[in-house]
View 1 (tube, rainbow, N blue to C red):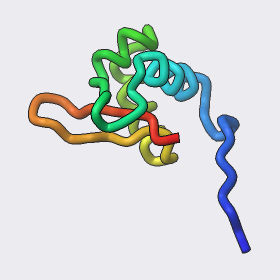
View 2 (view 1 turned 90 degrees about the horizontal axis):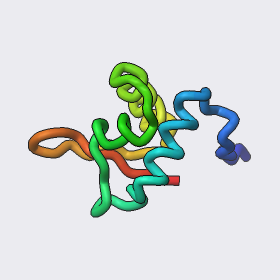
View 3 (view 1 turned 45 degrees about the vertical axis):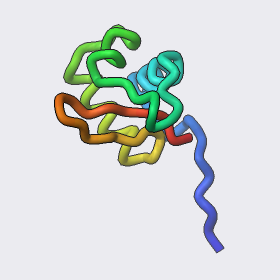
View 4 (view 1 turned 180 degrees about the vertical axis):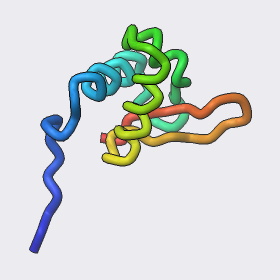
Length: 78
């Protein structure tokens, strides 16, 4: 039987920075989501890097993307 074990080792440097930035912003639940712009400022990385890293983090299950009227929001899921 296979159980998936999550470690930060499956994240690259930028993904780790962005994960930490989302955490630092307090986006730990759906009612406290932050926009990519908020995360970009907190991580001090460019928009392209932030966007692709957020997408990758969502794929890996670290963050969840929530579609909203103006801009998507993100929060940590693990």
